[in-house]
Image (cartoon, rainbow, N blue to C red):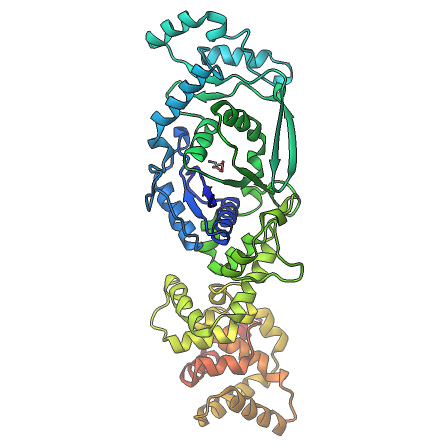
Length: 488
Ligand code: GLU
């Protein structure tokens, strides 16, 4: 039987980083085994409906390079792929279970349920089918009568009283739960919508899913699902529950400690391949001493059996480290094209690709993400408006102005505006005055960039070009210096 897996998100408005990992592992598994990957939208909780969420999900999954074989955006033999469009299927299946004696009608009002909940010890509520209002306590005939009168009802799973539920998880091994710890789960709600459990099991079966790969938070639901498969007489797909994602302090990954939406990381300018690489290694790594992998390598090497049980720490520092490795090794032409988009987004226009290529070449080793270049070195796009006064005070003396003027004249005198030539001119000048490089490079850097840090100053001058450098120096000497001297 060929492998069929699915990614089954609920459209909450954004793609959680944990969701992306689940989608990726399903994708790797499907591709590795020449199987199919299905996208199914689990949108039966209408209270959580968010406009545009599905389009956004698909856009983000596509950004990550995940290709589906079936889904709402491509169709397929098991359409529709929106659970909200399959309500009649779930209802039919819930009723089938009632017929088989595996489920029953219940008529408790929300108030009655709330009261029972309040009374239950330690608030650990478990539905007591011998006490509450259902087909067992009021009788079958009365139940049918209420239904025909239009009284709201739900269908609940009739969980056996004291039975061992066993299942095997590829990552976590054998798990045994006693059915006495399982609640008589609602399968069909009074509005005719299924709960997650019913819809999920019915669809996984009807869509011929062979392996369920999803986050560990769904593990507690499995005993209910096992009972459902048994009730329907269906085979249980193979199960694999992926480890939780954790904050650095080992608590469950939360919005409070950082971004959890993939979209936030896209907006921040992480590379697609670097981000996917990082996410793929949350809970699995094919080798202990390597962390850079292409998607094709990840597909080739993927093994569900090798996924860790213990939680995986979502460490942004590691993400940055991986991203900067990509930044350093990608072809400069490719980077320049992408960088142009960021530069324009920031409102800078008119820069040639050649200039942007030089800027990226000059600065990519100093930042973690491509757009960070703009924040790190804004002076590559606009003349400095502010000048670091502390830096000025530290490196200024009465003769510095004179040196800067002389250096300006040297720059004016040459047409060879390469960093080596500029360096040699300055060094020659300094030697003639028995000065050191540090006596002028700091003031020069301040004049050109306004800042105390950056890439090599001569390389920076070369990229900015003669005209720009000369104008900045003139402006600094004539206009800025008198002001800075007043302030210091
Ligand atoms: N709809 C569930 C979610 O949002 C799917 C869980 C599963 O894969 O079974 O994650």
